[in-house]
Amino acid sequence: MVTGLARLAWPQRTALVLGVLLVGWGLVDFARAEPRLAVLHVVTGAVFGAAAVRTRVARLVGTLMGVVFLVVFAFGVGEPGGAMDAGVVGNAVHLLIGFASVAVAESCAWCEQRARRSARRTARRAARRAAR
Image (cartoon, rainbow, N blue to C red; front, side, top):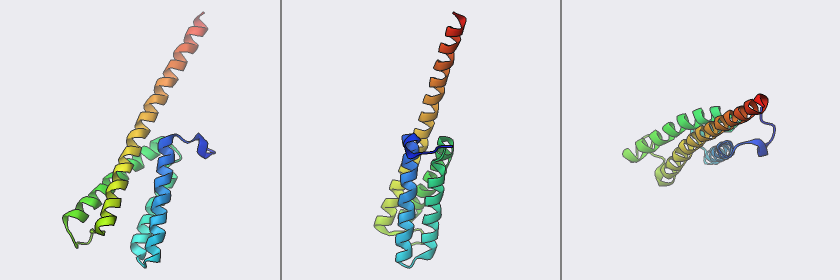
């Protein structure tokens, strides 16, 4: 379990920032009297924030949310005035959050691979020292 923000890898911090931004977006939706969207954005932000605890979880949530936000963007742009259309700004934000989510997922995978390589190197060095 991670105990401090400084111990989080940068993709985890990015996931946490995305979570905070989505919760903020949800609070703005509450102020605009759009409770369904508000609850959706607050819950999504809470999921992102909770996913920041581990890189594996952040990778999974980033992948899933990236797909969801990009699909919402595609349907919003594809049907102007339709149920998924969030307006120009909302659609742009969906696109940006979708790409940011995919970037979090990819960077978490990169961090996991780097940690595995480092662990293998450390194990090889320890084995060489023990063999001497």
